[in-house]
Length: 504
Image 1 (tube, helix red, strand yellow):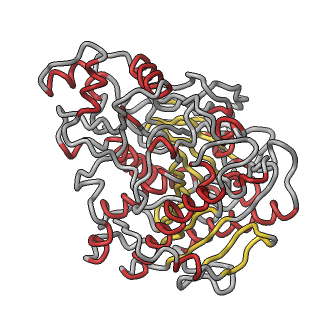
Image 2 (cartoon, helix red, strand yellow):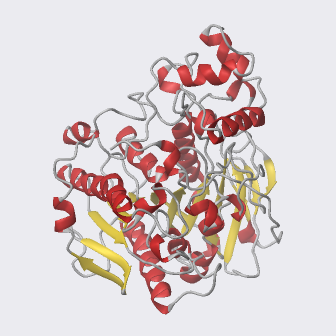
Image 3 (cartoon, rainbow, N blue to C red):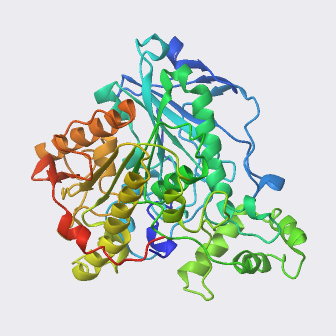
C-alpha cells in the first residue's frame, strides 16, 4: 500500500523547555559506559526514575559525515546527561491537522512552528530506568522506542512520549529513545553516494541498537531482553530491520504500532532528481555527482530546512520527497516473497493499529472529517497491512504473533469526538502521560493504560511467551479501551474486506 510520506508526519517542530537538573553523587546516577562516565538526573515528580539524557552514540553527522553512514561516537570522558538533547534537523508544516491544531503534545517540546532545539549534531539516545540500577536483583527488560514522523521528523523531546510515569509505576523495565536522521539528511538519495549508503537514517537506528546492546547492563538492563517498539514510520523501520539483520537482530522481540513493511511510503527517484533539485537552489547545480555531494555538505543545514519548508508550504511543483528507497540492503522490493523464503528474523511480534488511524490523513476540519474516507484510509493503509504483516510472520514461523486494536476515545487525548482512536492516540496511554494535559483521565483510561503497559512489558520480558489476556494469540485480536480495558474480539469481517489488496 502506498501512502504519501507527508501525510504521516506526527512530530516536526521543536522548542526548548526547562529541565530541572538534579546532579547527584548517588552511585546509580553515575554510570560507566563504553564512551565514558555519564551522570544522570532524577525529577521530584518521579523520584523512582533515573534519566540519562542525550548520550552520543555516533559522531556528529556534519561536514564530510553529512549524508554518510554513521560512525560510532568517540570517547567523551565525562558527560552531564541531565537535559533532553536537540532533535535532528526538521521543520513544521503549516497545514492544519490533528497534531498541529488539537494535540501539540505530539510536537517536539509540545509546541509547533519553531526551529529549536534542533541540530545537525543530534545522534544521541536517552535512557529512563528505575532507581537502583546494578543493585536490582534481576536485569530488566528493555524497550527501545522508535518514534513516528513519516521519516520526515520526530525526536526524543515529545511530551506525550516521555516514559517517566510508566517506569515510576512499574519499576520493572527500562525505556530507551533515540534520535536519527530523517528527510534529506537521513535519506538523501544523492547520485554521489553508493546505493548501499542512501538510507543512512536506518543505519543510524542500527548503531543506536548496538550501543544499547553494549551498554544497557550498566543501567540495570538485560541485553538478552531488548524489544524494539515503534509507532508509524518507527514501526515501519522495525519491520525493515527484521529483513535486514536476519541472523543478528540483537532484539528478542518487536512491537509495531500502526506501521509495518506493507505500508509503502518509499521514495521512487532513480535519477536522483530530488537531491539535485535542492542542490541547484544553493549553487550546487550542474556539477558531477561527486562535486554536487561535496558542495551540499558545505551548505548551512538550517538554510536547507528553510528552503524545503518554504517549498512545501507553498505547494510548489515538482514535489520532492526524501524517505527510504529500495537499496536491497536495508529496504527490499517484495517482503512477502522474502518472508516465504525465510529471509526474515525469527522475532516474536506484537502488531496492531488504531480503530480510527485514518482520521489523521484526511482533510482536517474542527467540526468533523469525511468519515467514509477516513474509514477507508484506516482499513487500507493500516488495518489491512497490519493483518498482512501478522499473517506473514505466522506463515514464516518467526515466533509468537499477537495482534491488537486500540479503540479508546478519551476526551483528554481526543478533544473532538470525531477523532476517536486516531493515529498515535495509544502512545499517551503507553507512556503514562495521558492525564498530564486537558484534564484527568477516566477510570477506564487508567485501566486501559495499565493493561497496555503491562502487556508491552510482559511481551518483551518473556519474548511473547507469557501474555495475560485469555484467548490472545493464534491470530486472535485484543481490543484495548472500548468499554473495557482489554478483551478478545472477532475481526473476521474486517479482515475479509482486505482480500484482493495488492500488498508488497
